[in-house]
Image (cartoon, rainbow, N blue to C red; front, side, top):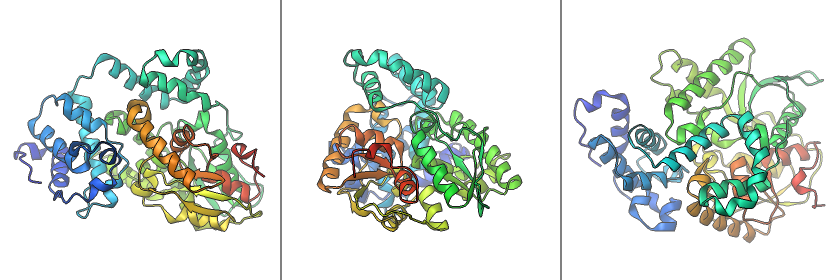
Length: 429
């Protein structure tokens, strides 16, 4: 696609980067077959190449984008399925983030939309506020149907969520046995409140395999959620905080890897080198931090899983989009599950998003519910005993529609190597 940016426009590094990606697009159309919104809606403007055109025209025209452009870009899940099928290797993640940040800075949304997006951005990145909101959500559940599709859906979603606190509240966990490795663990914002079973299973798994685990207190949010809502300044602020803390851990504490068990966060942390590339103070440190980031499945393959029991159960493994498309981590979770003694089943249409996509199921509930129901139907076709995945958002989304127990990958690996049975599997065996 040919862009029409002026020489003055191209002096802006953001515009220059966007132009380079847009011009890679040849409109071959391979991306349309793997784009969830195009598969559902059949609208070219709800396909990646249509959105590339929209972003190009929006940036070329300048000023406030029109509502139709905003609507089609808002419908993008950022699942990045298009990136694994694009023959010209467009960095669509970079492009959609540029488009969203431009919209956030230049388009005035309706008041209720602005309030809802601000509420989500502030609550989900602040565990204290999120815990308070979860505690009071019970009061609103009887009235969820009166609150509209988005807010009512958010309140209804909390029925399956139970706030808790991790058993490992300190900032360092040292095994009783001599350690072979020293790692840092990113505790996802949401997981600090409703995913503490995942955190605890991860810590036990790491300690059991000879790791001293650091959890720097200065790391608040990785920046993933605000980044994909177009709130770039907030995302970069969080990224700088995390980079400063983790770089210090790498240099002073000898941390070998930054372990992430929330795949959406992992994709963002691995991209810090790009996100802060124009920051002279943080660019080099961000690059080093990115190089140390690893999904928990990548790390466990590296250190070697040591199973102690072999549960004879069939597991349908759901690939989070951010893991399979964003990080290209596909084989490692399956390898670990098989080594732990599970029978592994692939879910049909595994390339299609479940509809969670960070905040998507809260902001685009109609499309998200269609994708959730489609994913649940595909899960049921596997006739598996358990569904495992690597992202709490996917667990929450699929759990609304599928009857099969949902667990995080680390909960199964922890169980197979000597830990407790995951609470979700209490009725099995």
